[in-house]
Length: 414
Image 1 (spheres, rainbow, N blue to C red):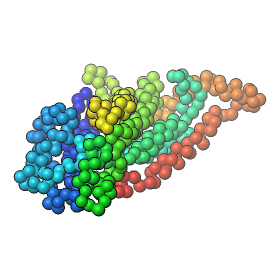
Image 2 (image 1 turned 30 degrees about the horizontal axis):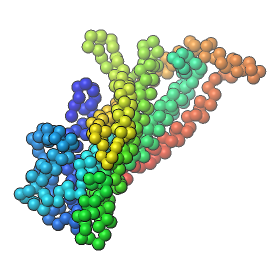
Image 3 (image 1 turned 90 degrees about the vertical axis):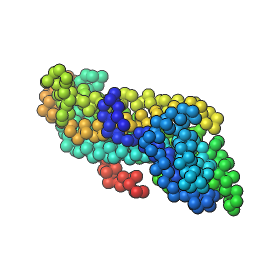
Image 4 (image 1 turned 60 degrees about the horizontal axis):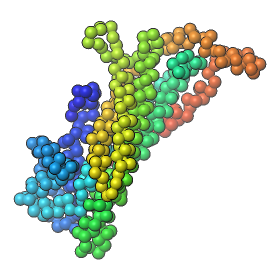
């Protein structure tokens, strides 16, 4: 999957590609069929079919075309699978998808695909935490001028600037690590009535039906859940977490873009991009592309929230459908931006001499506040004017140490 109009999109690979999403939907159908057999609802012969083997690359265009007729890709997929099973396993063909509805398949498949995006984003964030903590330690005392509203303000250190970057990344990590990816199983209208009916010969039909959601979750590596088909917080939280990440990365990118201007030269990318006509250029391409993601991600998340607010009845017309491609685009772009931000930080060059020179050149102006405070207090100005800068580094460094010492959460269950 590639996108020439989104340079770097290839970093996301097959994440949320058509083939990957089809495979996720097939995995949902297969796990559900196995669960039906496991609880005794469906006959034993219906289980353990290789459903993915029934979907060939040549089917992809047909599925895309047929999806328009039903408004979603699940209906066409079920028809294709049943047709492929009819001769070789009539029981599997008959019991496939029974008790599910198209929203169950699509929503759960979205969560299966989102898991890879979450895992990759967490890995990028952990790497950024490691690199930023090292930058804070290395530049605890590297002096530079602080800027407010684009103008020189007072002295600070690059260590404190990096600590602010680190805090943003840590906040994003907290959001992403707290995400829950649940299965969606509700049947036609969120009641599981069909599954309870199918389990009518069992001692506890309701218990058997609701237990299937747990079996499905276990089989797919997702969280069990009651139906959430009309409460879209699961989707909006994913979007919000992605935007929290791009916010944090955009803040870093903006500083790099500003401080790498030739007239400042306090930061630079290790290998800037060239120009098609100007051989002297070393453009901060990674920072530019990260900023691009930060500028476009909030609107995608806003679409998810608008769709959630428009949710109606037991399945929404249009609002639910608007989520799928939006979520795919947002999560792919977050994964790409995360890897670009990691690469940016790993090769970031800090030009301490330029930071010191700029601060020294502005010495009289940036000490103006200090002189007024000393005059008010009736004391001589201190040699430095860094306040509690050093102390403010400790909290983000402690948070970073905790993140890096912990086992990556999603690795615990693998």
